Length: 121
Image (cartoon, rainbow, N blue to C red; front, top):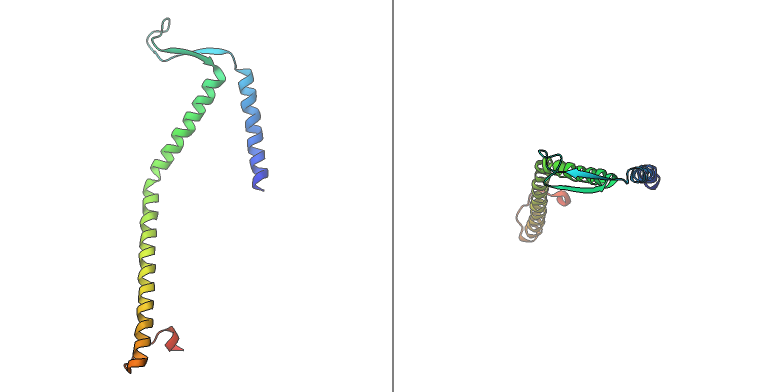
């Protein structure tokens, strides 16, 4: 099912990119100097589809970074909760081991022990 969905998304997207590339292969001049239109200080020439695809790729990367950055709080909270859960599990395991040792020592030593799951039944 995943493969079918991927094909249904990637195939049309690939066709659109190829058609865009073929239709816009004429070089255009890109000027990074807003003040001088006739003789720009920084300018380069590239096919239009290269400029469009580069702009889309940069936008996707910047958008992904912005989302990653904004979700940092939630990732940190999840890490802290996972550490707390590990600590609580270790503490519970230690208590269970301690109560099992106390129950074993109490039966041989003659002292009374608090009931555990094994003793309660």
